[in-house]
Image (cartoon, rainbow, N blue to C red):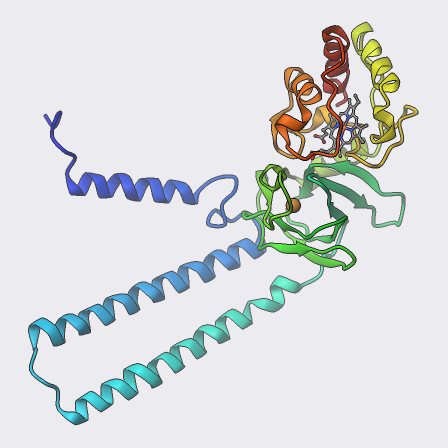
Length: 332
Ligand SMILES: [Cu+2]
């Protein structure tokens, strides 16, 4: 029985280690790599960590030796050898080797994509995503959820509308800044299917922390099917409530900022809503994609995302709001 007694050191250490290791796994972890770049970066991390631990042990062992085990003064010759060997030669050689290793993995990080190109623009505070087909056809416009084919190297063109953002999917690759007026790029090569999380990694204003996105890696065939559908028009309202919801959408001026392909809504200020119901999250990873959450978003926009450029529609009557939420949630 251990009840009532303080936890033992070893069990606390075990709990601590489990918590730390559990923190390494998951949807937003650079130490749970699912992409070519992330694999190389995770290796780099472990090599540096192991090196640091070995050095730390070595320095402490030396310290213990000269303070406890053999506290007599060293001979001048030994002291000089230690200072020159341990203080100059050893760090120079070791840092030289580490620099060589780190430089050797850089060309791979910069290699261009080979198939599809995706243009991603950092907006206030959401992600504009355009898939540019290889044959030069019209881009497939989407937002706030990136889909990628597994095993293919997708070129990612990065831009920013007004301020600097940083594009980061820890499980897939390192981060890259998105800078207004200047094109930056990277390539993503996922090695397994799954769902991951990206996050803006450069402070970009009040709701910076609420600027995330979902990344779905699919088998190439599934991805092709999804992309063809994403490029198509919105589904027609499935029932009377959805049809009324669409009327509210058109009457309230939402179309000035939002596009829903296949309807007169052609706005480009905000995210494309053609298939908004098919995304996993709402408002750049801020809410789950449910009818209830659509209604909350419309009624409390600036409370959910302070500083947002979309007006709040709390004046809508509850029925109109519910119909509108129902319509949007049905846009798969
Ligand atoms: Cu940002």
